[in-house]
Length: 520
Image (cartoon, rainbow, N blue to C red; front, side, top):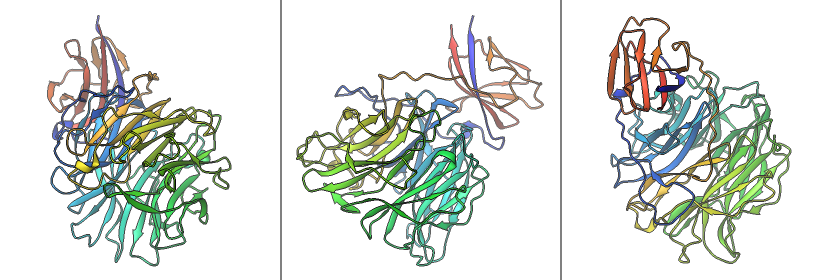
């Protein structure tokens, strides 16, 4: 007997069928150095530039991943996205479209507790005369997108820059479901500096910008997270005064505290070999799971220059919601006195309070040029760290790139102890988006709760029974958009279908996504 196990994700009825999207499937290349991590290329179009990556995991289906990045496959900057429904083993990718300007850049990604993904992009004309920030929304696991929805656009005499997004998924938050976008506004000496906007309707509309920094110049690179009780934290670099700053909101992003200092730093940004821009931004994460031993803690990692070691990754923690901070701790464990650079860190916390940090690292090249991605974890709230572990199986040579830049950040998300990482990789001769996950860790899937009412049951034997006979034909698409069945019957027979991923559409709308595992 064939057993069909279906995981059902409700889709927005306004979504277009997947068949309208240009997608492709690919896997990874052969590793040349043994690591515990898969190294898989995500982008299908090669021999150009992809960089500045972020990644998010669907909390309703942890095998569903979405990544975003800056993409130059058309010869000018756009934002690409890739999605996977098998834990990152295979990916599909294409470009966002629909913003009002020719160029898109600086992407960020988040996902809410309904499994809806939100990608934020900066859009601008080639002459940089204006700009806007826009959000795309996917209720189909990243395979198709609504929007874009406007956060801010065409502000007079100002340029918006360096935006990121997060969702409030905190169980004990009265503002659960809120979305927050932060960015830097340049050229406006009244409301410039670090700004925030929030959405209370799942990304459809956004509040007017609220300035968070006391300075309107000399600040850049805000990062946002949500902690216990829905506290919104925003941190940024004050490069004018050489410090990292923090504000917080106790009322769902309506009002914020005055800025306080997280840490003094030696430099705001610099260029390292070969002319790579490195910014000391504060990657920030809050432990918001009441089941964690470290519930309420706040953590920051950042790059800073040292006299004896080059650039290092430093960690600080706060156990009083950002009022005070621990002393800076160097968490890259290459030997003291080895002058090589570590840079572009990112941080995340899983459901059990495990902290994971990833970063670029040049310890394997005494010439301080070739770079790898390394990872370290803390299981005790940042008191101790695991030995740094190499993620990349091949070092990247940024000196051989078509562009001197590799972007300003990489991406990380974690799920029950398992890290999912995206970075810029040059092993194939150009800048590509690579994905890595730890093959030594087993991901335990939890039962999925269906919120839809189209299906009678989520586990069926050999057939799918609809609640009623559709007035229009039901159509089944494969994940790459091929139409494989059209039926007006109440019962759809899956007996001859191969194991895979399928979309069910009725009346031209995607009603449900089906993830089918076939056990013979």
